[in-house]
Amino acid sequence: MRLPFAESARSSVGIEWELALVDADSGDLRQVATTVLDAVRPADGGEHPNIRQELLLNTVEMVSKVCRTVGEAGADLQRAIDEVRAVTDPLRVELMCAGTHPFARWNNQKVTDKERYATLIDRTQWWGRQMLIYGVHVHVGIEDRDKVLPISRAVLTALPYLQSLSASSPFWGGKDTGYASNRALMFQQLPTAGLPFQFERWEQLEGYVADMLHTGVIDQFDEVRWDVRPSPRFGTLEMRVCDGTTNQTELMALSALMHCLVEHFSTMLDEGRELPVMPPWFVQENKWRSARYGMDAIIILNKEGDEELVTDAVRRLVSDLEPTAARLGCTDELGGVHTILDRGASYQRQRAVARRNGGDLGAVVQSLVDEMRAGRPL
Image (cartoon, rainbow, N blue to C red; front, side, top):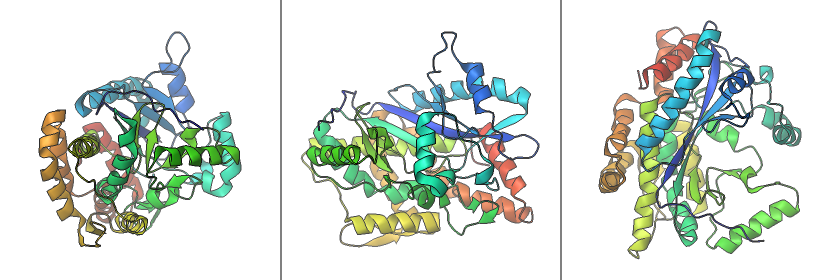
């Protein structure tokens, strides 16, 4: 089976941001996505270019157009958010994002009436119904198909940086899970989700997809839900590892980091340099450590098994990427990673709010709503 890889401009960028719809008074989730989507639907009755349907009726997804810089993509998303707020504000519905809602119950949520979602739930049953989670997906254009898999393997060495910085799902169903990112370990329970196989040749990926289609595991490539995956339809590498980001500033910081990583590794290939790679068992351990400990994770740095505190490794990585950020026009946005390092990740802020309010997770939801409104960590 052939899997064509579309043409795309090198290091073009697009961002997808899943947002929860919450009641302004109770903080619980509201099942009003259909109302929102109907209100913003274009006059021709088609799909809004920047506001999309998702699995659950408590969710809308903001999707940027293909952009040159993460700043442009962020502005595109903000325009879509403003359009959604014109609908949700009169309904007393707020926008919120985190890897999970702190106290909402998964069994109270309604699934969007669409065949692909019904098929997913029918197949995955209890685990599929549990997917009350929110994430950020960043696409970066790659101009040469032969670069895609080497860059994908290299990005896996940076996976714990992305997961620790974005970790925002410490609570689940009203309880503290003890994890910085409960979403990370929940999502991988779905078939074809989690860490990707480290294929070395495109033909191996094509063989995998052919096998999955033949055996009925998937009906289309988009049902491969890896943390890092090629997106042949768009000609991009799609990074899906991050928890839902609670505010625009952190979204831009994380998107800039991913944008720079892909361009940095692409430049290394151009220069004939060897890209970093790690054994799958180290990549898997790093995912667990960053999900469990977040910013306090001691991560494995390389195939030799050297280790370091993730925050120290991130500071060095950001410094190394500064020339790339200058080329991509995202120096300010990449600098936002230091804001996360200095002020803490979302899971840390959420726990601090819970402590200050005697464990009241309603206060945590309010803090997430406030951060979304403010566009920065509070």
